[in-house]
Image (cartoon, rainbow, N blue to C red; front, side, top):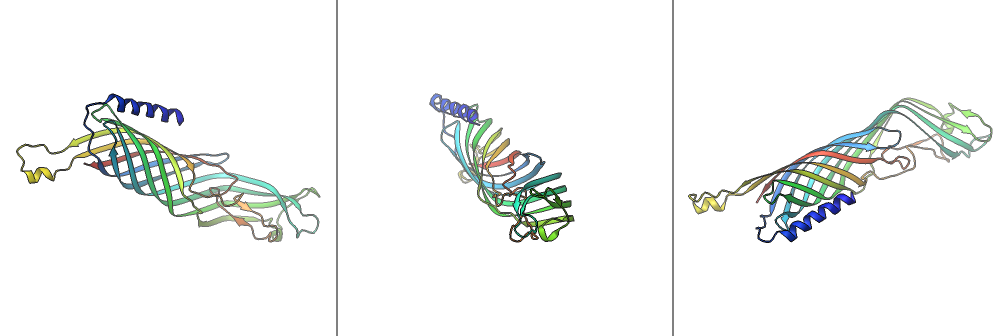
Length: 291
C-alpha cells in the first residue's frame, strides 16, 4: 500500500508544480451509491460477503488536478462463514471433577455456518487526482471510517460435540453434561454483534463525464443563474480493513467455565480472538456531482 501512496503523491505534486495557468474547477456536492463483494482470508474458514451504501458528500478542489472529498453514507453489509468442519481444543481446569481437574477441552462442529449483518455509517475521506487535465479519469486514495449502528449474527451446525481428554488419567470423556462434555444436534445460537469503530484503506480508479453548465448566450439571466453543472463518476475500488468493526470479546468460539462447566459460553467466530480475518472489499461506485 505504501508504494501506491508514494506514486500518487508524486503524481499529485508534479501536477501542482507543473500547472500554472489552469483554472481551478468548481467545488462539488455529490450523492452516490456503491456495492461491493467482500473476501476474507483466514485459516481453516471460508469467509465471503457483500454490501452497499448510499452517501452524500463534498468535493473541494485544491488545484486543477487535485481535490479532497469527504462523505457520509449509510451502509449495510452481510457476511457468511462456512459451511465448514471446525474444531478447537485448549487446556482447562475442572475443579469439580472427581478424578482429576486437568483436561484438554475439545469442540467439534460439523457443517458450521455463521452469518453476520451489520448496519453502519461510512465516512470516506479521499484524496482525488484527475488526469489528464480535462478531468476524464480519476484515481483516489484515502481512508473510510466505519461507525457501527447495529449488528447481529447467527451460528449453526448440524452437530456440535464437546469432550475432554484427561491429561492425568489418559482417558477421553464423552456424554458427561455436568462437566460440559456432550453432543448437540441442530446447534443454533444467535446474538447481537459486539462492535467498535472500524477503518479501511481505500483505493479507487474511474471515469468522469463532465456534462457542464448551460452556456447558451441567448438564455435569459434568470435561467442562466440557476443552471447547475453536473459530473458523473463511475469507478471501481478496493478497500482493506485494518481496524475491524467486530470487537474481539473472548478467546474462543466456545468457552469453558471452570466454576460452571455445564453452562458453556458461546461466541461468534468473527468475535473470537482465536480467528484473525483479513478483509477486502471489491466494488463499483456511482456518484453524481453538482457544481
